Image 1 (tube, rainbow, N blue to C red):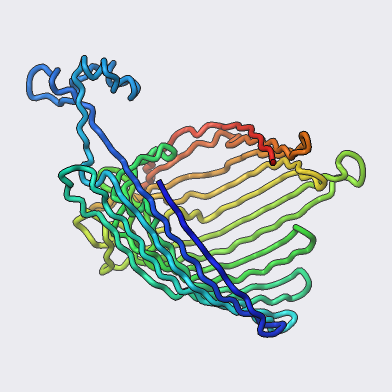
Image 2 (cartoon, rainbow, N blue to C red):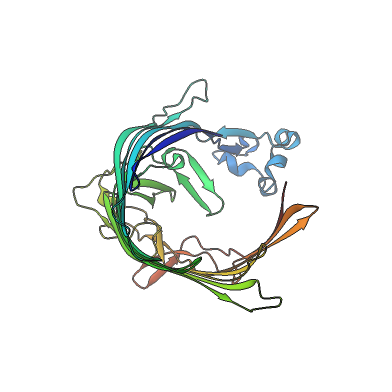
Length: 439
């Protein structure tokens, strides 16, 4: 259960036609209650002989029953089933994030071709995660988090309009990334989408990012463009996923990371016909390519904190020079579609490609296991939208066909010439049809 309250406001004043200043503030309060109860189903009284594992006393036909049948009165009575809670330490948590921020910025049009936006944001936040008492005699639950931090976050963008439709932008900023509640809560949870079990780390801290970007944009026609950009990021205390000795995914702060790359983007429309049925339709081509390089910076003396772990050496969890988790070196997005300019009518074929990426650090140890990699590869989807008018109301029909080529999900570890599949499975194809009516 989650409750979110937020409010914001700002005021802009023009000092003269070329200079304006803005001040504002935001307040937000997020609270989440998380509860997960895990039980072992045992039948110790029907075991014959001793010693035996009580959970093995149930006949195999009973163990495969649906949960509602397994816990029905007749089954419980016949097999004298008992429930034993296996997570008495941290079955429930209360998480809260309070954020207060104020900001000011100035926009100065230096000349007809040159302008600058610059400002700073001051932010104070209190992020807490506390165990909630569930049992009459509470367990030794010490997995709490209290992150009270304040930051000054400057940002500036310089824009040069070289000519009509052609502009260059140079920007720099400092930002932060807070750990999510699920990354902080020391509570196991299973994700059926990824077929993986997770447990948070209450000792995580905020990540600080220093960003720089240079971008050139050319808008050669309405809704048509070509752009190229280069970017750089330095990240202090990035949050990385790793697998522990029980093959559960958890999280820890790496010391530092560097990330840089380039992005290219293009959109071009083509008129299909001057008259007739295809006159209002156009062919839309969109392409995007992103090249990214990232690496962790881990020194021999660097430390990290993992709840319940004996080692605090960052080198036991992270390898110097390794890629950031979730980062592919190459990402390509292509769209080929038809659009009607007179009404809602779109048919789009989407082709995406991503090169191999690390999704989790391998099991730490001496030596540590190789990282777990994902191979996204090429994926093809099709989406169509059609608008109709029904009794004076707008009706939209949407058709989606996903993963047309049947691309598998593949995760693997690689050591030399040896490759081991870790979490690979068939995703399958999906088709969905939906309708929405505006009132």
